[in-house]
Length: 267
Length: 252
Image 1 (cartoon, chains in turn orange, blue):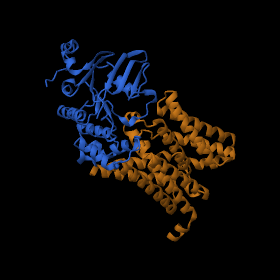
Image 2: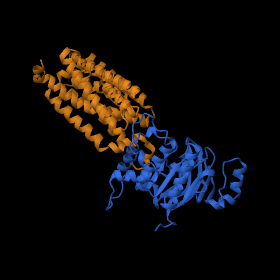
Image 3: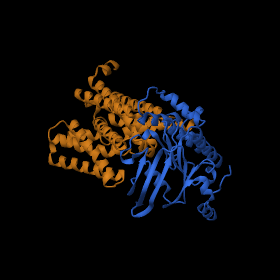
Image 4: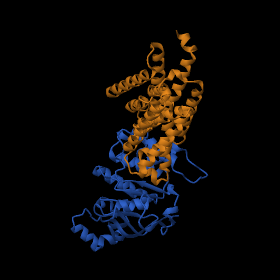
């Protein structure tokens, strides 16, 4: 059985793409949770879903098209927050409703891609194509580099926004960077765990890390570790027991959270 | 050698209103190198607004501000300025950050001019923590410290970037009385021994007045701006005393 597993290109592709996604989600999740922006992944996933629907309707590469639409959507959320003076969650609600409405409308107009679109609702990591591995690796490098190069500035901004502003940091640029990195990560998450569970993947490992970590670097480390354990463990469980991978990943992430919470209470 | 006539901050004819409600009216004052200026006044007198205008967080609707003789609009040497906001210790209690990380984040973020000899970040962090007497707490979580210790960490953070002026907005809010005294003694020492220019918005004039050399008394308008010793002789000081304010002169 183990020989079969290693040799299975489907399984290996899933693990590789999942590992890249785990790294991006683990890093970004910490920032989203601490900024009280956990629901941004929920909102952006709906926008990404509309992007996939548009891509399928126009016969363009749905993932690439979805990244473009999601990036535009992320900038629109910031603009709505800044210029329409809307609270962040209201701006997200506006855009996520628009995204889902557009996807439903396209599905009713062009019925032939309904089944493929549905795979983005629940994700399908074991159907990842070879080209998508490169895309996942590219996105993981992009997000890791974006966070590593700006780590001090991001920590300073989140810990004390006013002092960071006085020290001359370009806060708006950093806000945009975080939201845009979230957008690309979510598109990848959509492919792997699907629209309905992508929020959990960005939030739960970070929430578990916060139970145990004593400083920021530890938080990032634990969040990436828990994200990797959840995704790689979830894919393995799904493969061995013939379960839906997205559900196995999220349940494993929740089990890790419960253990971290109990460990924190004990010590 | 420090030039004590050098103007670090100049505020000229500044007015500011929040949605039509005047907060500051025609304020003009200057801060010279080496000054320890206390900005005092009742609640809602515009003290915080004035400080925020000085550091560029708010734009005055009338008047102008100069920092180090440069107009605020074009000023970009922010490493020369240290700022601690009101309620700065009311940070997110779940934020996981160590004392060293608080200082490192600022130190690595602030753009400083290239210099021949740059101490490593770790050494700078320890030096800054030594100045505030917290060198043994570098690895501790910020949330495990007392309010007074957290204030000292924020001072260390500001000092680590080697600013020439420190602006603080009611920094001891929520800190116990002995810690407040220690904190103001530290500010006095930084002003006297390291010649750091300080602007302090405060309610605790009774505790701080033995350290300050200049006073600005504000209530939308500037009622007094000058030497601390002259202020203590002035009618304005007596009026404030009769008004029940906590303004007690300290005899040297």
